[in-house]
Image (cartoon, one colour):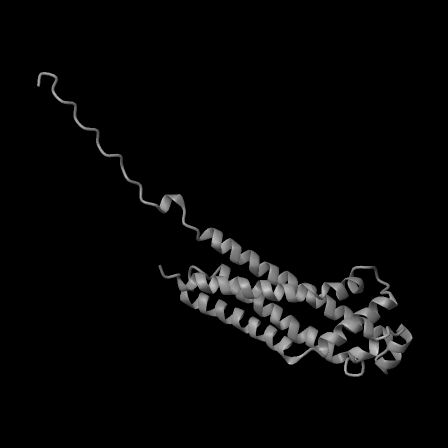
Length: 204
């Protein structure tokens, strides 16, 4: 029995979204102290975040390539799924596409711009071992200044939170669509009971 194409596309969207959501939730280790521990960001949190994003910035090319490929396949599958059923899928697939595009926009306009603003080229991963003090980090940051350095890191952390919420919304929409399109009991044919045999004549 062949699997319907929309069902395969739904599975692809769900798997790709779950993969991307997991990739962004990993950043929570560095982002949490930046935006959820009060207005005063501790110096050790800034140093730890720079250490983390320095490793992220200097990661092998296949890491960024994998994320780009998964994101592109997920968006493409959503567009094809919406094109196959533009009327029935307008609510769920249209909203899914909007959330995916909004997450992509936040990533390219906020995260990428902030990571390029940070002095990650001057702070290679090896420069954090042994762990430097915040004063040494500020000296390596150059003319950026500690305030703008913290603001850039907080922008990355907040953008990651927005992206994670958008991807969670995609999974919720796809789950709701699967629930709405499930076969109901009323769609199954109802067969009438066969008539009872007529009683035989007692005289016979």
